Image (tube, rainbow, N blue to C red; front, top):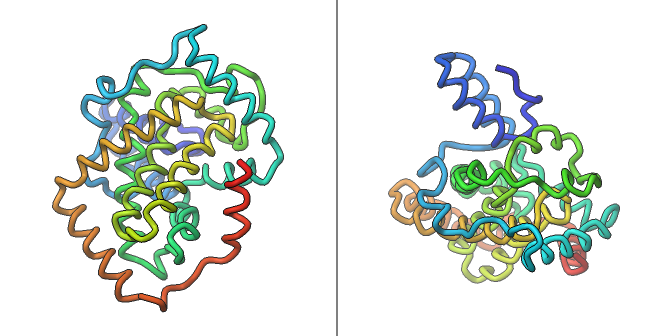
Length: 273
């Protein structure tokens, strides 16, 4: 089974499922392992789409409705940001390769999140991120909403992903669910920075609107799916154990934790976007 250079992990892993249906276990396993490594996904705590996701969020806005007009207006605002610092940050937020989530949240956390500096926290985010990323997949498959760049014929901030994204529904946004969910997880580890971390998770998802990859309602409903997924994770013993381990790690580091750089620039960029 061929995959478009593993451009989009969701597309790849969904393709693995199709391969399994044909009985080609070897190819499916190899593709899954390659995708998991490239996109920094770990073993999920729960796995799969959020049960009942289609009952949790409404259908995407109907053609000609006020909600669709709101989406289009937000898209026009996003297109005006092309080439700006916020556009460049949106492209960085699209990155799901090794260590990217830790880098995205380090400034909001006030410490460098990485396998080297905070291995237990990085492990937690890697596993939880997989759950959040795939939590929207059931609703996506139901609606198969076209993405903004397919409608307005304008570029996205990740043109190398566009071919794969055409076959992956826009509503709700998996990136938004992942960013918002990781913000919630981090807020539970660092409660004194909860507002900043959740705000960064919100901005991580909004980067998809800025990127011309998602509509505003895609991003908003991704947060709803993430919130329910986060609540569901609380019942998982492995998740609770990893949260406790990450809290202990951060407490042990204390003031000696490695600090991120250039956070003022990131804050200014987010304020402008």
